[in-house]
Image (cartoon, rainbow, N blue to C red; front, top):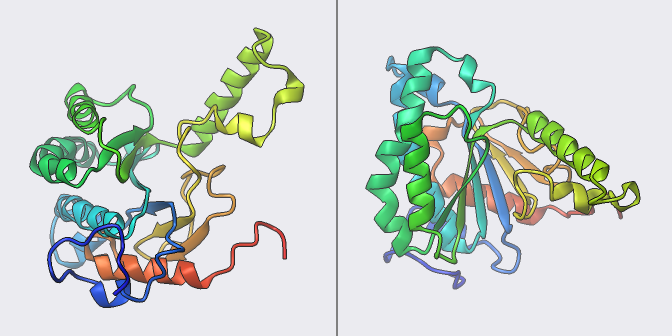
Length: 255
């Protein structure tokens, strides 16, 4: 087995697949659309919120899988700006999950040098949700390992429109000139700055769409889809996605 950044315990799920990975071609930034929690629960005659709870428990497993092989950034699409349209009881449950997740997992995340971040709009989030996230961000701010970035109350079209508005205002205020505007400058006006663009996007549950997620940032990302719902997506499946990523040639429009 190749010596990756760190292995936890003598034997972990997915070790056989992980052993086939090239340590020289690990994606720096992996983004995941964690889809299918509700459908996973309904297939088992459980309420949809049971699926969200199981999905929450899977976050740590995949975070550790990413950390084990040296991924630098793991962005999880936790709640979109469109998800507010869901039934109130489901939204209320989702907003309370950070209160359960962070107190339970924060010590292990700190022990593994994981840094918590959030990409999205704080406005509109309940105070208790925001406090749980901000406390976790503060507790892990000095960590220097994997960045676990939650895309929460996030929507890419809103992000880009907001970026354009701020860009135009800065031009009006003569802070920048139109001639300065290029892709690199525009990227600095997005919520994801200064994170690198994702190298790999994973989406679970069989849906084959991007769903208003990082539309600018995913321009040259590799896409990997699976029929598995998020609660049943294991560390082994995560490593299989990385292995497929390593089989591909990223040409960025060239030959």
